[in-house]
Image (cartoon, rainbow, N blue to C red):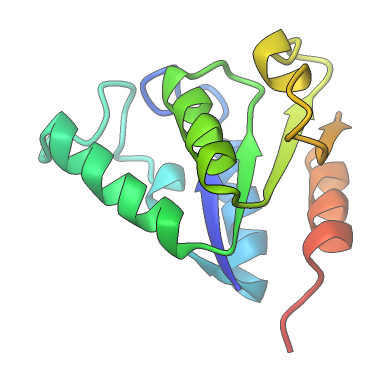
Amino acid sequence: MKVYFAASIRGGRADISIYKQLIAYLSNNHEVLTEHIGDDSIIASGEVERTDKAIRDRDIQWIEEWDVMVAETTNPSLGVGYELAYAEHIGKPVIIIHRTNQSQLSAMIAGTDYFDSIYYYEEIKDAIGILEAQLGKEE
């Protein structure tokens, strides 16, 4: 299964250690198209070697290729919001995970009927348990 992992880059990198752990779990069981989200060298200014248009075009192509999006939404991000709206627009399945002890999920996401797989967690082990239950493991 191809997974598009969405999480904040320009919105802030405070949760990169969580992203790395989630990507590691997902990569052990699925193909993750966006492993770079967990790359320490990518700072809040983003992928400086690519133009904004190149990033957008690449990410849209990947969104169209994947089977499911996993979006970590704790750190608000305009880019993740755009990716979620695009996934809704093309009818791709989405799993949203959000840490309840850090922030409140945007009403624009929580209030959208399309996003019916929203899960809240407090610790990384809980998030991994959610992903395992929702995605299973590829054989």
